[in-house]
Length: 379
Image 1 (cartoon, rainbow, N blue to C red):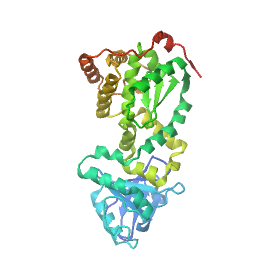
Image 2: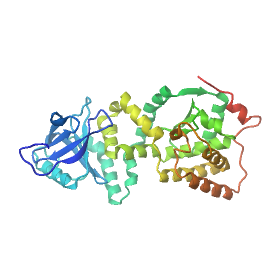
Image 3: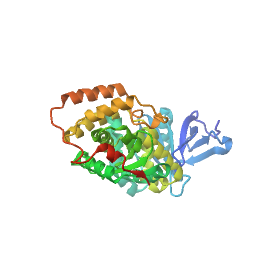
């Protein structure tokens, strides 16, 4: 138990983010009238931190979780973040903070109150968007709090990590075909700069980084029997990027407040550690999308295909083929990382049956898909 001269509330479970690592320390939090105390469970009594209300620069509540930003994290120029879900402690924290001499809570709100005008000007639009989302119950829209520039920066941070773990694959003819597919499929009004990177791996997989870098493993190319099959995968991954599913998955994993804190408060410099990049890389590359995200990507991906005069029958064929394949790394197989396989196949069959146009060929005259597939080599 945490001792304090004045005890008003029992300690509650809390997470402490030190501003250096995305992995929190678990512990107990006590809210007292004069200050708050956090005890790291792994460090015993030596892990007790005493925090003055003067050092609290933000309190917010999103989806029932209170997030407290505290000045002075572990990393230089970084702030710490404490999260908990007890409503009584939330109310007590606001009450005691409003009575403190700092004056930062003279106008209590669930959303961001910062000690400097500059931070208020920067974060005011995000606070308004968050308030609107909570009022209307649209918590799934909270990813709009994060600027698109964050997606781009995260993708550029993570790409080198992937390149360290996978061997780049060079196939000029295949790259040219994929680039043509990309130009046909990317929405005309898209603001993203898409790139396609290939890596040598027997795993039949593809995934997209938040910045529009689509990673394709050679196992997927080998598993395909026609270029329109790969075009279907590209359309699906492009929709993940356009819909910002990557950053929305990170919100689910890390929380909206922590991402805002890192990307706006602490700054990207705090993300550029090997440990943090490795964590984010794993989350983005291998975290399964929700069923709704997959349904959205399938539905809108078919629209992209049809808008480009490419039949979705190719993707249907690939889904059927992959459903019968087995891999030594099932978590990395494209089909296994996308839930509801039977439902997706049924959806593609229905869409293929509705097609009433003559598809335009993906390959140009004289190109041969098997020869194109076999013309590359690892770098």
